[in-house]
Length: 234
Image (cartoon, rainbow, N blue to C red):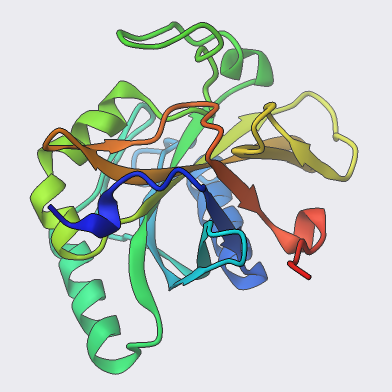
C-alpha cells in the first residue's frame, strides 16, 4: 500500500493560486453560460490540477494548486462530465518531463444548476448523511469513477479533487467570499448573477479501496488567498 495515500489525521490544506482560480472560474462559466454545438448551455466540464505538496509546521499537508487545465477531450453534458483518462496520462507525463516542479495533484469538475435553490434541494444518495443534500458536494457518481479508475489515478499521484459548482441568480449578488459549511471544506462567492462554490476533497486508501473524503470532513480546508486573504504560519 502506498503510505502517501493513507489518511493523515493531522489534516490537509488545499490552496489555490490566483492563476488556477481564474482558470477554474473562466472554464466553468464558459461551459455554463455559452451555447455549444447543439445550442446547449449549462454543460459540466473538468480538467487537471498541477502544483506541489509540502508539509506544514502543524503536520498538515499543503497541496498548492498552481495550474488548472481544462480537458478538451472530456465528454460533457448537463448532468455529468466524463474525463478522458488518456488526457490525464498525457498531461501528467508532459509536466513530469518538462516541468517536474509541478506535480499532477488530481482534477476538478463542475456541477451546474439553474438556480441556487436547486443546489440546496438535491436528493440524498445512498450512503449520504444528514446535511449531505447540497449540490456543491461530490456525488456518488464521482466517487464511483474514482474507484473504477483507482489504479491509474494512484499511479499518477492523484491526491485531491475539486468540485466547482455554478448556479444562476435572479439579480446580481453582493461581493465577498465566505465558507459554505462549518468545516471550511467549501467556500462560496458571487460573480454577477452567478453563485459559485468551491469544494475540496482529499483522496485516501482504506481497506484496499480508494476513496474521496467525506462531505463536511473535519480534516480538510480550502484556501483561496485572492478571495479570503492569505493564511500563513508564523
